[in-house]
Length: 274
Length: 343
Ligand SMILES: Cc1cc2nc3c(=O)[nH]c(=O)nc-3n(C[C@H](O)[C@H](O)[C@H](O)COP(=O)(O)OP(=O)(O)OC[C@H]3O[C@@H](n4cnc5c(N)ncnc54)[C@H](O)[C@@H]3O)c2cc1C
Ligand SMILES: Nc1ncnc2c1ncn2[C@@H]1O[C@H](COP(=O)(O)O)[C@@H](O)[C@H]1O
Image (cartoon, rainbow over all chains, first blue to last red; front, side, top):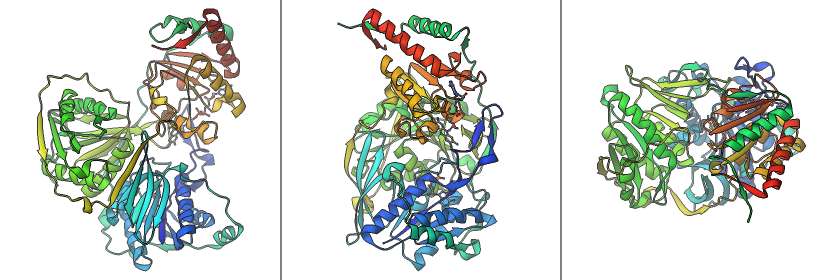
């Protein structure tokens, strides 16, 4: 079983703060991290490999610094890492991203046939969740999104049983292999990395490819040029009028609020118990 | 690609168990406005197994046309079978705009279709408009990196597509005597062509925080300080029979479950009363709650943006105010001897 996990480097939105007054990003403390959903994707690959054997590759598209997320993935338990980096990839939207990643996946598949691809449910910086299904279409394999459990992998029959989260519950799906999964955070808990992994990660050098290392690439479909969507304008949303601020001492404010609420009989009444 | 070959606004009608999803009806309302501005018909496309009876409802909610594909392989949503249907319709009838609800299935379908049509797709839109001269769809969503919105355009590819958050658009009042046309189409596909099977669907609402249906929500933010102080949020909610929600920062801190997150990457809620306590009012939070009927904000910073969307605001320390509110409600209940009910 050879699993490839797509991993993205993202700014840590937990730490960067938006300054509510200027509406701008406070970049002073914006470390780059492995997209949290992708960490769960790597962890799931590790869990599957424990049962099926085989190997795990990770693939990332990004600037040279994105090597860091590949090392992080090795720490979690991946065996191999590929980084595709080239100025031609810059400014890609989801369509151009899935195009570039699928070209790299095709090359990986030639050397080590791929049985499963795992992506995160979405990247926390863009929040689209569109890249995973896009890759699946381009690789001509079925996508299964919002996965909360990989129940069983049957290598003989080449099938996999999966729980997929729905708005109200979940569905149990059987998919043929190879397939592409996008995973929710609840699929697993990230385990502490064993010491040997840490050592391996520290000295690991990923395989690095530029556009010229990939085959049959139509450059017009890469990066900004290959992206059908553009940002038209940025604006601060029309501010609603804002309501009334209650004045006075705390006690005063609280009783004013209680009065207002009690007046709102259409919203809120007190029902005497029987 | 000749952009002028593409005309009409379409909405994906998502159905489960012979019921149309709320967001599809909301999108018919939003799509109606776009279609009127562009002076083109509004169509809903409905895929499934024996779902024809739902077509009437699609028309009642504003569609001029319903494109209908019925087939046994469409019984349950699956990416491969559904996209076959959508690809067939989109290639034959060439709409200029397609809208999908940002549900698990809507997002999955839209992402796959966008790839095969090589067109642009904007995710999790919260505002929609069209420019009449250029006929461009203006799909806006909170931008990464600021308390600002970004309008995404797709200038050179058709159809222009977007997924739209549930509960931010308004459905029209259904009009049972509205007239419309039903166009039935066929796809040739066998069950063996589809590489996934749905073995079982399990409805499990126990894990949901029920935020979507709550009449009253008490939502606490990072301003509560720590997990211990956060108990005040739970206590207030218990006292008045409300559901508890939180900001993403609170969920990341592990004070609440992910299901309880309100906002762009959590639930969109529209309760009658929404308490926002110790919440700054970042746009990613506000898009998920601003349509609540009556919003009460408590924040010690008078300039916090949450006050812009609040109906009533109290500037002050939540640690002081919330216990007083709890005491007042408890007193009221004791005096009248009853429980809060919400009508
Ligand atoms: C891509 C992306 C998606 C996101 N999605 C979401 C989402 O779905 N939902 C969401 O909520 N956020 C989301 N966020 C995060 C969002 O930008 C904000 O960081 C978050 O909403 C802030 O949470 P908060 O208001 O609890 O904390 P803060 O911004 O830290 O605000 C705390 C507030 O509490 C006030 N305060 C402090 N002490 C007290 C006190 N004693 N009494 C009263 N008030 C006090 C402060 O004045 C401050 O205004 C997203 C961000 C990104 C980048
Ligand atoms: N630049 C990238 N490199 C590798 N994987 C990516 C990249 N962008 C997106 N992905 C994968 O696609 C998933 C969804 O991303 P998105 O569609 O951007 O929300 C991520 O969780 C990753 O698994």
